[in-house]
Image: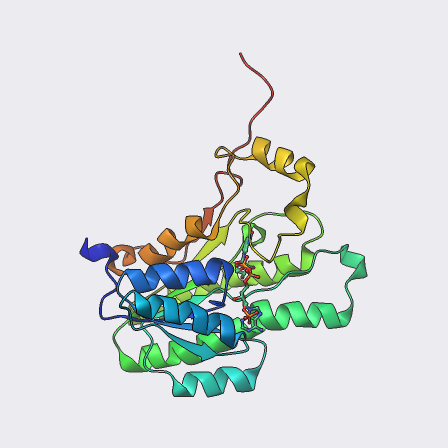
Length: 256
Ligand code: NAP
């Protein structure tokens, strides 16, 4: 199973205090990576790393605010060389396009796009300088590949990550750095917990995807492990949906 082993690799997961990023960090750690869990919530990070260390791993936490250039540069200057960068930090705000304020627009883009661009620049520059290759995994969204209403600014940020994934894969291929993007479907987390309270919404989703289950962070983590290790050496520049089939399938109330 060497293709899936991350033993000897150092992984940085940004947005690892809860939800999808935490599930990915736990799986990378269990696959053998020396995993650094980064976010703003130090207490949640400590709880997660304590639990991982109790399993025998070397997980550790790092306070990092992806929306602050200063925080990114300080954090990265204290980190060891990184083999795997997972960009999972993200926020969302659902509104009619015409109602977003400039402050809301800036806050969403600063966190979901500009901060991730800056972090990927500084970590990627060190990967290149070291000359040992690497892996970058963006956590995009269905809004990286299609449209749903009231998600315009989020879609701008997540489509930006998809474009960056393709270009960086081309640009950094010569350094043996593979860059991919996971597009999670409907995954129940703190980010959307309030939205998924109505039966009506669940009924709509059930008919719209081949696997009718609601997604969980654990559905996303295995692909992140694959994209972090040797098994993905020939996969790059891809935006891969993990969405129970939402982006490709639907069902009809019809029997032939
Ligand atoms: P979540 O449970 O709310 O987790 C968001 C994570 O991002 C937390 O660890 C949070 O940590 C971190 N974060 C937010 N702002 C940050 C900042 N300024 N600096 C550093 N970290 C920050 O949400 P989630 O659903 O797991 O989302 C994770 C990623 O998946 C996001 O990029 C999201 O867009 C994407 N996604 C989610 C879904 C879904 O259905 N849930 C679908 C598609 C894509 P702190 O608050 O501790 O800083």
